[in-house]
Length: 317
Image 1 (cartoon, rainbow, N blue to C red):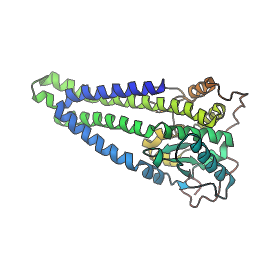
Image 2: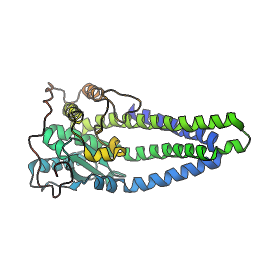
Image 3: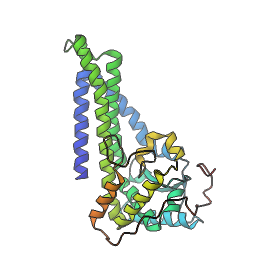
Image 4: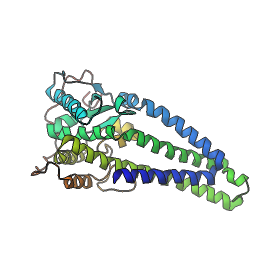
């Protein structure tokens, strides 16, 4: 169902681009806007993993690391990747007190996963496995490609909107809807089309999160642990512990398993992530590995900090 929803939203976004593009820029304007969007997103698609990992100061680790928490984390990711039929991704750590994680890379052969030191400190090993299985599900589902296509179309619509503001739209010049009325119509489309594209883009992002939860629960074999982890991460992220790198780079917020920026606790049109309680309820309905749920522990400063990361780039200095 989530795949079907994604396809339908992509079709709607494409139709929005075609309709708004023809009204604003005509065939020529559409072609120019699409070419610009493809060029920008192609560069991002091929280089996003390196850019994002460098931005967050990610350090690559493996099963030989001297710190037990990091060693177990690396071993579990490698084991679950093999179980999911995926190539071994680059396994990295980010020095940040806020618990969170993300996956990046243009395809499974060039994937990387990242977890913060706060995540390893706060969660149990089973919960960490659940989170990283979710990230591996993003890799398996090729969600980076899906979101790149989405961003390309949304970017093309934004380019068309700018075209309309600066040039008034080629359709006016052709005598179709010219004059004051045509100008007002072009401006209205230029304002509303990018907003509509953004809403569709965010809806696609939310649907991919639900799907990654479902597939991740299958990879880890334990939806309950992922549900507990989501609750803990959400509570900590909303508890005033700032993710400094994420706040400086809000465009990357959608990549994390929980939005690292300040936000609301319910699904809404302007959210890149589903509400955590909705995700938890969906995981509980999966019925895989059901058992008594443990109450989430009170959120506090992590008692243990992984050490020996090689360099310090986060709030620990």
